[in-house]
Length: 378
Image 1 (cartoon, rainbow, N blue to C red):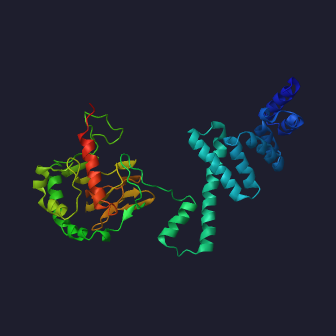
Image 2: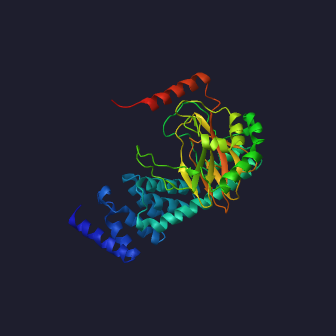
Image 3: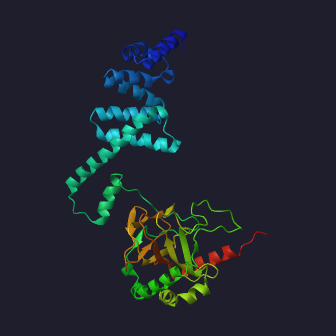
């Protein structure tokens, strides 16, 4: 770049900073075509043209910038704004979303773009509602649950959440968040024990909660988990089975609960399972989003003490605990729970094999975990 062009561009940038948009545009236009494209401040010229109401010229300048730097966040946002002003909502949405994705990848919103980024977010939210209304107007509102979810995914109201076990992944399983309790006929017999379980729970609580321990514990032989509930009783467990062994003292205090668990087809892996416990969540407690260790199991919750404003989200599906209604879900899909109410919630929690895993593979998986448990380097 010649020294003369460099001086003119510098004057143009100074004029833009002084908000003398006419002077800035005049100076920058005069050298735009002669300057090497990669060395010219196209966003500055675009901003000057935009301030003057010359949207076509502004868009031509920002297109030059995007040709040289296709993921330039400022250029993407400005292009989205120009498409928005041109009435091209679909293009505006595309550029705004690409800018958001790039900022998420970068891990930051450049401070100088904060106002335009906030505008883009507000625009995306409003157009999502408009687009949803347009779609439903064409489709009609009598949609199946699956089609309603598909529309929510299309319009950004939901996200796709798939199995992401942290330790063991078994391929080919359906991506089901919650299972219908009717698929497990033995649950009905278990529910008949709930009144007796409630009496046992009341007795344990009246006795000072002895037996309830923090669910998130630190094993001294392993690094401490980075969990805000570490060693706290906000989320606690009263174990009946732990790593394949009956917790004798707790079992003796709660015969009705043990009788109920005998009705469930609990996995049997020496040193690993069954695992079954009362899971207690105190008011205000938030179990943050996480995924379970493996996707070959399901988690079952039988409500023993329900609480208002207490919820469980699995993927994009949120449920509450209702009396007499078990929740059976795949914990390898991102999930979280929170007690937003004033009362304690307690469920009987235990593991099940996923029904889609054949018996021979269950046996092989059991051998895998026994091998893992018995491994010691050297």
